[in-house]
Amino acid sequence: MDDVLADAASRFIEYADIRFGRKIRPVDLHNRTWADVAGTTPEVIRSWLFEEGFFRGMKVIPDSQEVVARLCEKYEVFIVSAATEFPNSLKEKLEWLNEHFPFISWTHTVFCGHKYMIQADYLIDDHEKNLIRFPGKPVLFTAHHNLHLNHYTRVNNWREVAEMFL
Amino acid sequence: MDDVLADAASRFIEYADIRFGRKIRPVDLHNRTWADVAGTTPEVIRSWLFEEGFFRGMKVIPDSQEVVARLCEKYEVFIVSAATEFPNSLKEKLEWLNEHFPFISWTHTVFCGHKYMIQADYLIDDHEKNLIRFPGKPVLFTAHHNLHLNHYTRVNNWREVAEMFL
Image (cartoon, rainbow over the protein chains, first blue to last red):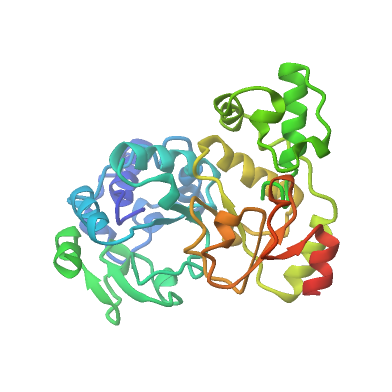
Protein backbone atom coordinates (compact mmCIF):
# COMPACT_ATOMS: atom_id res chain seq x y z
CA MET A 1 0.00 0.00 0.00
CA ASP A 2 2.45 2.67 1.18
CA ASP A 3 4.28 4.34 -1.70
CA VAL A 4 2.52 2.08 -4.19
CA LEU A 5 -1.20 2.79 -3.69
CA ALA A 6 -1.00 5.33 -0.87
CA ASP A 7 1.26 8.36 -1.11
CA ALA A 8 3.27 7.87 2.07
CA ALA A 9 6.05 10.20 0.93
CA SER A 10 3.66 13.15 0.54
CA ARG A 11 2.19 12.38 3.94
CA PHE A 12 5.67 12.53 5.44
CA ILE A 13 6.36 15.86 3.71
CA GLU A 14 3.09 17.18 5.15
CA TYR A 15 3.99 16.05 8.69
CA ALA A 16 7.54 17.44 8.45
CA ASP A 17 6.04 20.82 7.54
CA ILE A 18 3.41 20.79 10.30
CA ARG A 19 5.72 19.49 13.03
CA PHE A 20 9.02 21.14 12.14
CA GLY A 21 8.17 23.80 9.59
CA ARG A 22 10.46 22.03 7.15
CA LYS A 23 9.69 22.59 3.48
CA ILE A 24 10.71 19.38 1.77
CA ARG A 25 10.54 18.72 -1.95
CA PRO A 26 9.97 15.16 -3.20
CA VAL A 27 13.40 15.23 -4.86
CA ASP A 28 14.98 15.79 -1.43
CA LEU A 29 13.84 12.29 -0.46
CA HIS A 30 15.85 10.44 -3.08
CA ASN A 31 17.67 7.57 -1.40
CA ARG A 32 17.67 9.35 1.97
CA THR A 33 15.85 8.38 5.10
CA TRP A 34 12.90 10.45 6.25
CA ALA A 35 14.65 11.18 9.55
CA ASP A 36 17.70 12.51 7.73
CA VAL A 37 15.66 14.76 5.44
CA ALA A 38 13.51 16.08 8.29
CA GLY A 39 16.52 16.65 10.53
CA THR A 40 15.13 14.48 13.30
CA THR A 41 15.61 11.02 14.74
CA PRO A 42 14.28 7.75 13.32
CA GLU A 43 12.34 7.37 16.59
CA VAL A 44 10.37 10.57 15.96
CA ILE A 45 9.51 9.51 12.43
CA ARG A 46 8.57 6.09 13.69
CA SER A 47 6.25 7.62 16.30
CA TRP A 48 4.26 9.29 13.50
CA LEU A 49 3.44 5.86 12.10
CA PHE A 50 1.76 4.98 15.38
CA GLU A 51 -0.33 8.16 15.42
CA GLU A 52 -4.02 8.03 14.69
CA GLY A 53 -4.80 9.40 11.25
CA PHE A 54 -1.36 9.07 9.71
CA PHE A 55 -2.37 6.30 7.32
CA ARG A 56 -6.02 7.29 6.92
CA GLY A 57 -5.15 10.69 5.46
CA MET A 58 -2.85 9.56 2.68
CA LYS A 59 -3.51 10.63 -0.89
CA VAL A 60 -3.90 8.05 -3.62
CA ILE A 61 -0.96 7.43 -5.97
CA PRO A 62 -1.90 8.70 -9.45
CA ASP A 63 -3.67 6.25 -11.77
CA SER A 64 -3.60 3.44 -9.21
CA GLN A 65 -7.37 3.27 -8.81
CA GLU A 66 -8.08 2.98 -12.50
CA VAL A 67 -5.28 0.52 -13.20
CA VAL A 68 -5.99 -1.73 -10.20
CA ALA A 69 -9.66 -1.80 -11.21
CA ARG A 70 -8.65 -2.92 -14.70
CA LEU A 71 -6.18 -5.48 -13.30
CA CYS A 72 -9.04 -6.95 -11.27
CA GLU A 73 -10.88 -7.75 -14.50
CA LYS A 74 -8.00 -9.87 -15.78
CA TYR A 75 -6.24 -11.12 -12.63
CA GLU A 76 -7.07 -12.11 -9.09
CA VAL A 77 -5.62 -9.16 -7.18
CA PHE A 78 -4.71 -9.18 -3.51
CA ILE A 79 -3.64 -6.08 -1.59
CA VAL A 80 -0.85 -7.20 0.74
CA SER A 81 0.35 -4.59 3.20
CA ALA A 82 3.13 -4.95 5.76
CA ALA A 83 1.05 -3.36 8.50
CA THR A 84 0.99 -5.51 11.62
CA GLU A 85 3.92 -3.53 13.05
CA PHE A 86 1.56 -0.57 13.42
CA PRO A 87 -1.62 -1.56 15.28
CA ASN A 88 -3.45 1.72 14.59
CA SER A 89 -2.82 1.43 10.89
CA LEU A 90 -4.89 -1.70 10.42
CA LYS A 91 -8.39 -0.26 10.71
CA GLU A 92 -7.30 2.93 8.95
CA LYS A 93 -5.90 0.97 6.04
CA LEU A 94 -9.11 -1.02 5.72
CA GLU A 95 -11.16 2.19 5.75
CA TRP A 96 -8.77 3.81 3.28
CA LEU A 97 -9.11 0.86 0.92
CA ASN A 98 -12.90 0.87 1.28
CA GLU A 99 -12.96 4.55 0.36
CA HIS A 100 -10.47 4.58 -2.49
CA PHE A 101 -10.53 0.98 -3.76
CA PRO A 102 -14.10 -0.11 -3.00
CA PHE A 103 -13.80 -2.87 -5.59
CA ILE A 104 -11.16 -4.62 -3.43
CA SER A 105 -12.99 -6.92 -1.04
CA TRP A 106 -11.89 -7.71 2.52
CA THR A 107 -11.48 -11.25 1.20
CA HIS A 108 -8.55 -9.99 -0.88
CA THR A 109 -6.93 -7.75 1.71
CA VAL A 110 -3.94 -9.07 3.64
CA PHE A 111 -2.13 -7.33 6.50
CA CYS A 112 1.11 -8.99 7.46
CA GLY A 113 4.67 -8.47 8.60
CA HIS A 114 6.91 -10.51 6.36
CA LYS A 115 5.46 -11.06 2.90
CA TYR A 116 7.38 -14.15 1.93
CA MET A 117 4.62 -16.55 2.86
CA ILE A 118 2.42 -15.00 0.18
CA GLN A 119 1.89 -17.20 -2.82
CA ALA A 120 1.25 -15.32 -6.05
CA ASP A 121 2.50 -15.01 -9.60
CA TYR A 122 3.58 -11.37 -9.24
CA LEU A 123 4.34 -8.99 -6.42
CA ILE A 124 4.40 -5.25 -7.14
CA ASP A 125 6.24 -3.68 -4.22
CA ASP A 126 8.52 -0.77 -3.38
CA HIS A 127 10.74 -2.62 -0.86
CA GLU A 128 13.54 -4.99 -1.74
CA LYS A 129 13.04 -6.82 1.58
CA ASN A 130 9.63 -7.90 0.30
CA LEU A 131 10.71 -8.71 -3.24
CA ILE A 132 13.91 -10.58 -2.50
CA ARG A 133 12.30 -13.70 -0.99
CA PHE A 134 9.14 -13.64 -3.10
CA PRO A 135 8.77 -16.97 -4.95
CA GLY A 136 6.94 -15.49 -7.97
CA LYS A 137 8.04 -12.69 -10.27
CA PRO A 138 8.98 -9.55 -8.32
CA VAL A 139 8.22 -6.12 -9.79
CA LEU A 140 9.78 -3.06 -8.19
CA PHE A 141 7.52 -0.01 -7.98
CA THR A 142 9.67 3.12 -8.04
CA ALA A 143 9.82 5.10 -4.82
CA HIS A 144 12.28 7.66 -3.47
CA HIS A 145 13.94 5.03 -1.35
CA ASN A 146 14.59 2.45 -4.06
CA LEU A 147 16.12 4.45 -6.91
CA HIS A 148 19.50 2.76 -6.37
CA LEU A 149 18.19 -0.75 -7.08
CA ASN A 150 18.89 -1.97 -10.60
CA HIS A 151 18.39 -5.72 -10.58
CA TYR A 152 14.59 -5.85 -10.55
CA THR A 153 12.01 -5.40 -13.25
CA ARG A 154 10.97 -1.83 -12.51
CA VAL A 155 7.75 0.10 -13.04
CA ASN A 156 7.89 3.84 -12.48
CA ASN A 157 4.18 4.50 -12.19
CA TRP A 158 0.78 2.88 -12.66
CA ARG A 159 0.69 3.61 -16.39
CA GLU A 160 3.73 1.39 -16.70
CA VAL A 161 1.99 -1.28 -14.62
CA ALA A 162 -0.89 -1.11 -17.09
CA GLU A 163 1.50 -1.47 -20.02
CA MET A 164 3.15 -4.50 -18.44
CA PHE A 165 0.07 -6.37 -17.30
CA LEU A 166 -2.76 -5.23 -19.55
CA MET B 1 -7.14 -17.73 15.90
CA ASP B 2 -10.86 -18.12 16.64
CA ASP B 3 -11.70 -21.59 17.96
CA VAL B 4 -8.07 -22.67 17.59
CA LEU B 5 -6.10 -20.27 19.79
CA ALA B 6 -8.94 -18.07 21.06
CA ASP B 7 -12.05 -19.59 22.59
CA ALA B 8 -14.69 -17.99 20.37
CA ALA B 9 -17.35 -20.53 21.32
CA SER B 10 -17.11 -19.65 25.02
CA ARG B 11 -17.27 -15.98 24.15
CA PHE B 12 -20.46 -16.61 22.24
CA ILE B 13 -21.95 -18.54 25.18
CA GLU B 14 -21.06 -15.59 27.44
CA TYR B 15 -22.73 -13.06 25.10
CA ALA B 16 -25.83 -15.23 24.66
CA ASP B 17 -26.22 -15.30 28.44
CA ILE B 18 -25.66 -11.55 28.91
CA ARG B 19 -27.85 -10.45 26.00
CA PHE B 20 -30.63 -13.04 26.06
CA GLY B 21 -30.28 -14.81 29.39
CA ARG B 22 -29.77 -18.04 27.47
CA LYS B 23 -27.83 -20.72 29.29
CA ILE B 24 -26.01 -22.61 26.60
CA ARG B 25 -23.77 -25.64 27.14
CA PRO B 26 -20.87 -26.29 24.77
CA VAL B 27 -22.53 -29.54 23.66
CA ASP B 28 -25.52 -27.52 22.44
CA LEU B 29 -23.30 -25.97 19.79
CA HIS B 30 -22.46 -29.21 18.00
CA ASN B 31 -22.96 -28.69 14.28
CA ARG B 32 -25.50 -25.93 14.87
CA THR B 33 -25.17 -22.25 14.05
CA TRP B 34 -24.78 -19.75 16.87
CA ALA B 35 -27.93 -17.94 15.75
CA ASP B 36 -29.95 -21.16 15.92
CA VAL B 37 -28.66 -22.05 19.40
CA ALA B 38 -29.20 -18.53 20.75
CA GLY B 39 -32.67 -18.29 19.19
CA THR B 40 -31.83 -15.16 17.27
CA THR B 41 -30.95 -14.11 13.74
CA PRO B 42 -27.58 -14.47 12.02
CA GLU B 43 -27.54 -10.66 11.73
CA VAL B 44 -27.60 -10.23 15.52
CA ILE B 45 -24.78 -12.72 15.98
CA ARG B 46 -22.84 -11.01 13.22
CA SER B 47 -23.27 -7.63 14.89
CA TRP B 48 -21.48 -8.96 17.99
CA LEU B 49 -18.39 -9.60 15.88
CA PHE B 50 -18.28 -5.89 15.04
CA GLU B 51 -18.56 -4.84 18.69
CA GLU B 52 -15.58 -3.45 20.51
CA GLY B 53 -14.17 -5.95 22.96
CA PHE B 54 -15.67 -9.10 21.48
CA PHE B 55 -12.34 -10.47 20.28
CA ARG B 56 -10.16 -8.86 22.94
CA GLY B 57 -11.92 -10.66 25.77
CA MET B 58 -11.61 -14.22 24.51
CA LYS B 59 -10.07 -16.90 26.68
CA VAL B 60 -7.12 -18.90 25.46
CA ILE B 61 -7.73 -22.45 24.19
CA PRO B 62 -6.14 -24.91 26.67
CA ASP B 63 -2.49 -25.84 26.05
CA SER B 64 -2.21 -23.62 22.97
CA GLN B 65 0.33 -21.24 24.49
CA GLU B 66 2.71 -23.96 25.58
CA VAL B 67 2.43 -26.00 22.38
CA VAL B 68 2.74 -23.03 20.02
CA ALA B 69 5.82 -21.89 21.95
CA ARG B 70 7.35 -25.33 21.49
CA LEU B 71 6.36 -25.41 17.81
CA CYS B 72 8.21 -22.12 17.36
CA GLU B 73 11.43 -23.81 18.43
CA LYS B 74 11.17 -26.38 15.65
CA TYR B 75 9.14 -24.65 12.90
CA GLU B 76 8.60 -21.19 11.50
CA VAL B 77 5.11 -20.45 12.78
CA PHE B 78 2.75 -17.86 11.34
CA ILE B 79 -0.58 -16.93 12.90
CA VAL B 80 -3.00 -16.44 10.03
CA SER B 81 -6.40 -15.10 10.98
CA ALA B 82 -9.35 -14.45 8.69
CA ALA B 83 -10.04 -11.07 10.25
CA THR B 84 -10.30 -8.34 7.62
CA GLU B 85 -14.07 -8.77 7.50
CA PHE B 86 -14.20 -7.26 11.01
CA PRO B 87 -12.32 -3.95 11.17
CA ASN B 88 -12.51 -3.65 14.97
CA SER B 89 -11.06 -7.08 15.44
CA LEU B 90 -7.68 -6.27 13.91
CA LYS B 91 -6.16 -4.18 16.67
CA GLU B 92 -7.85 -6.34 19.31
CA LYS B 93 -6.38 -9.48 17.80
CA LEU B 94 -2.91 -7.96 17.74
CA GLU B 95 -3.25 -6.92 21.38
CA TRP B 96 -4.62 -10.33 22.29
CA LEU B 97 -1.69 -12.06 20.62
CA ASN B 98 0.77 -9.70 22.31
CA GLU B 99 -0.76 -10.57 25.67
CA HIS B 100 -1.18 -14.31 25.32
CA PHE B 101 1.42 -15.23 22.68
CA PRO B 102 4.15 -12.61 23.21
CA PHE B 103 6.65 -14.87 21.46
CA ILE B 104 4.75 -14.44 18.16
CA SER B 105 6.14 -11.38 16.44
CA TRP B 106 4.14 -8.95 14.30
CA THR B 107 6.39 -10.18 11.47
CA HIS B 108 4.64 -13.56 11.73
CA THR B 109 1.10 -12.31 12.14
CA VAL B 110 -1.19 -12.28 9.12
CA PHE B 111 -4.73 -10.91 8.94
CA CYS B 112 -6.53 -11.80 5.78
CA GLY B 113 -9.84 -12.77 4.22
CA HIS B 114 -9.25 -15.82 2.07
CA LYS B 115 -6.32 -17.93 3.23
CA TYR B 116 -5.56 -19.70 0.00
CA MET B 117 -2.74 -17.34 -0.97
CA ILE B 118 -0.79 -18.46 2.10
CA GLN B 119 2.18 -20.63 1.32
CA ALA B 120 3.12 -23.04 4.09
CA ASP B 121 3.73 -26.70 4.73
CA TYR B 122 0.84 -27.10 7.16
CA LEU B 123 -2.31 -25.22 8.04
CA ILE B 124 -4.03 -25.96 11.34
CA ASP B 125 -7.54 -24.55 11.01
CA ASP B 126 -11.11 -25.15 12.13
CA HIS B 127 -12.82 -24.19 8.86
CA GLU B 128 -13.08 -26.37 5.80
CA LYS B 129 -13.30 -23.26 3.59
CA ASN B 130 -9.73 -22.45 4.65
CA LEU B 131 -8.38 -26.00 4.43
CA ILE B 132 -9.96 -27.04 1.14
CA ARG B 133 -7.85 -24.83 -1.13
CA PHE B 134 -4.68 -24.89 0.98
CA PRO B 135 -1.76 -26.15 -1.14
CA GLY B 136 0.15 -27.73 1.79
CA LYS B 137 -1.08 -30.35 4.26
CA PRO B 138 -4.35 -29.32 5.92
CA VAL B 139 -5.00 -30.24 9.56
CA LEU B 140 -8.50 -29.82 10.95
CA PHE B 141 -8.68 -28.53 14.51
CA THR B 142 -11.83 -29.82 16.16
CA ALA B 143 -14.52 -27.24 16.86
CA HIS B 144 -18.26 -27.53 17.49
CA HIS B 145 -18.99 -26.54 13.91
CA ASN B 146 -16.77 -29.11 12.18
CA LEU B 147 -17.61 -32.39 13.92
CA HIS B 148 -19.29 -33.73 10.77
CA LEU B 149 -16.13 -33.50 8.64
CA ASN B 150 -14.31 -36.79 8.22
CA HIS B 151 -11.93 -36.41 5.31
CA TYR B 152 -9.23 -34.33 6.98
CA THR B 153 -6.42 -35.23 9.32
CA ARG B 154 -7.97 -34.12 12.61
CA VAL B 155 -6.51 -32.89 15.88
CA ASN B 156 -8.92 -32.62 18.81
CA ASN B 157 -6.82 -30.37 21.01
CA TRP B 158 -3.35 -28.87 21.38
CA ARG B 159 -1.93 -31.99 23.05
CA GLU B 160 -2.71 -33.84 19.83
CA VAL B 161 -1.02 -31.07 17.85
CA ALA B 162 2.05 -31.59 20.02
CA GLU B 163 1.96 -35.34 19.38
CA MET B 164 1.71 -34.82 15.64
CA PHE B 165 4.35 -32.13 15.20
CA LEU B 166 6.76 -32.52 18.10
